[in-house]
Image (cartoon, rainbow, N blue to C red; front, side, top):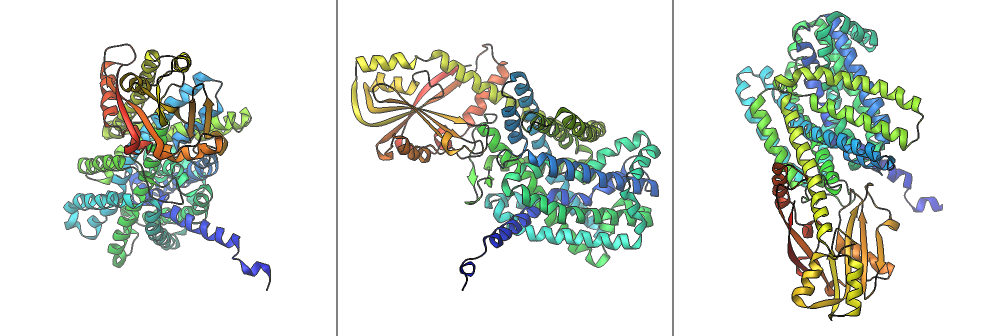
Length: 632
């Protein structure tokens, strides 16, 4: 028997893994963009003054086709997904990557941070509108199947959304296993419906030519430009596609798009177009009118399942982005639940889950139909697209060292499309577009307030602290009573004596045999390399400086990290180690720094943040907390 037969072929295992990940990606990542045929062409042809005549049908289809090719295939799948920060995607990971590539240009770093925070804030706005419009549009199929059930659309939508958010705690991998096969059936079904439509009217394939898109603009003038605000619905979910890259990896997502998702979408859009060419009245709801009457109810059920899955892409993306923003210091600490042992990127953030649920239900009740939500949709997602393009171009220029001509050429192509979509959506502000913008602005204010507030707190602590080096010299010369064991003092300033150490010495009149000043640093990479995780600085009198470094996509578990210090000759026995922490009580004042209302907002967020002890997994029975008041 040959040696090869004794073991399973490793390439076979990797193919199975790749197939499983691609299937999961179809379920979680592509649900959003996969359900856009439910409402996109209907909205394009329903725009004011866009009649469903052959010029507009072929022109609208041409614009949808080229939007999918330029925005999704070329920009996101080929270009933006190259800008992965050690496997992690999303605008916060991109911000860290862009800032790292321009370390020597402080002003550009600041511009990148402001752009990224605003882009992330808009993404949360998108995260509210997308599930609402997706589920509503699916349930609205009832209006065609049984017009008498029209008043049940909103209640059924709310029940479906409640079920979706209840599922979140089970984790993306388990959801992907369930959702993947459902989404495969969905894509096969819409592709089959599309083929059926194209066979009856094959001249619809002329729309593949960009000349029909140009003719659409010439035929409709300004109305044609504003119709781009509806065309953008075809590329919804692309930002979530990038944000979810850490869940499944780049290759499975690319393969699923090129060989399965894109062909199915194109077949369905062209099938809908063929139906409207044959019967212009079908423009009222071309998706459901393409479905044969006996299959209408099963299709509504399948569409509801698919739109629940569609919402998953944005929700998973919001969880990933929240963790990255938290680690990079832009949002308060929150509880994070890891839902997979294999993939560190698969997480559940209970607070974000609850907040999204409340806002989405509010949007469904407030807007009541997918047509009304389509009027609100687009501004947030196109704004985020513009910012993502700009940040990726900075990475291409400074990190990948592309020449200026390449960057400018690609930038002109992508930004022309992005800015055109964004401009066309600006008309929607008064018709509901204010809703995601207002949410985005609220999130932007909270993120910038938290970042600035933390800077002010650190500044105040540094100003009020004693210098560490002279303090240690004094301790060596005039030693207090030392007790056995190790004391670990968490501090943000390695040059100053921690408040907790001073309080302990002042009130208890003792010091531990070994005292460690511990700081935690979050890097601009998702995972810290092994060599950079620990830095130990020995000082006099059994004092040590210790810096633990974590990537922004890691779980900062301090006790676990301390076990690695034995390799660097600083072993820790957890039963003999006591953690000391200063808990700051922050007081808002009218000092220079931030407006008083922002000071009060920061104090409110700080009070409701997850305690550092829970965030860093410090055991409560090994912890002593000492209070300190800080005025900002």
